[in-house]
Length: 65
Image 1: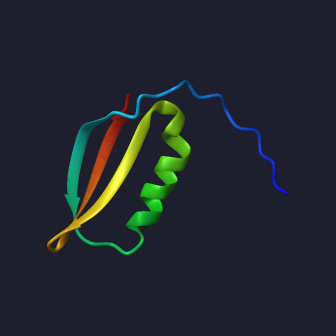
Image 2: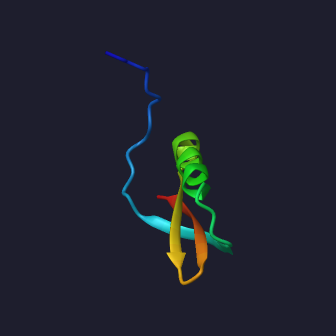
């Protein structure tokens, strides 16, 4: 069983505040970048999203309150 220490995180209300969005050309590997950012920057109260709109991908950055 893999038991990794977890870093203490303060309680969060779960509200998301949109900070920025950026449209980019579709890339099949982009979800890996978003996943990487979410895993490594969660302690900074940041969350990243990825959506597909028409022929573009939209990367969103949120602050978790």
